[in-house]
Length: 179
Image (cartoon, rainbow, N blue to C red; front, side, top):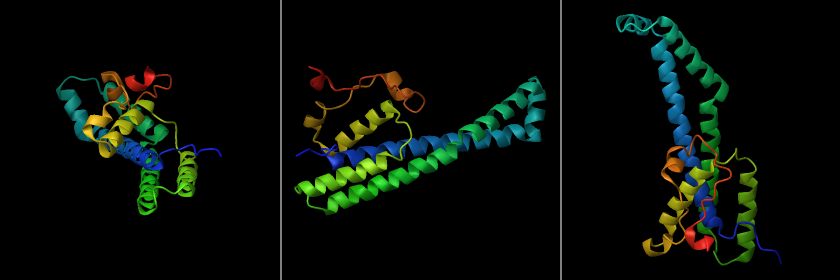
């Protein structure tokens, strides 16, 4: 008998929910910052300020065009809503898992299938962010003495660039699993 793809659906649902929470929060912040920049840079007061500090108005106009173009092309608000939807769905599955019998193998297969269905709707995974979410899920589930053996290894630049770079070829495996 084949085993389900998600061996621990409760952990994977929690990790995915945490991932989408982080991603939604980042994209919402980026969306708000760009909206603020567009409004402030487009205001007549910004042109007056640029003259006061001797900045050529062309740079101000270029900044407005750049911010507005990024806002329209990348649609950070729309992307944030996708992650908000997935976050909610993963928490719903997690609630169903909590309410069910954890030792039932049929239930394990059912939860694994639900998680696979949700995975089909996901955009490309930012792997460093996923590793951060994995470590947060470990923190939530395991005792402090146990969790350090399984924590995924991230460098400082992975954490800083987790929303920008996908890090598709980077191995974040814990040292205990690499031996």
